[in-house]
Image (cartoon, rainbow, N blue to C red; front, side, top):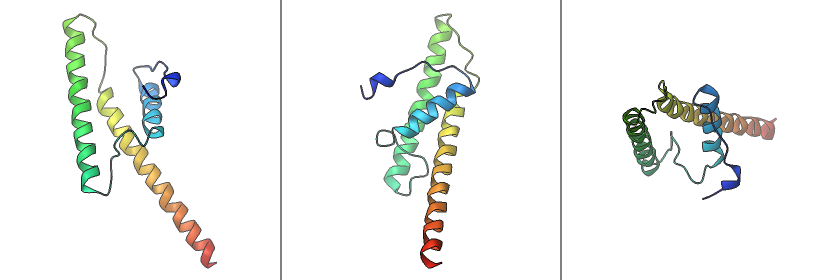
Length: 107
């Protein structure tokens, strides 16, 4: 396991989504990215997203069957949305930095 020494608990709420999203984004070489410009990258994200959400649904059903129900309240879907938002933010910051660098060069 990569970075096992950095494993920590996450709460099943918005704070946990933030923690999970940050961890996901920090490990960029290991996870697919939404908004990838390549067809292969887009397909990989779609496969990841589908597998993540379907596995989440299976886990919820398993917990319900074992009477260990946890209120997920759309958290898996919200996590996926948060990753997309984080990727949009990252791309915007990169574009802004490129524009600043270009304007500094020609100023």
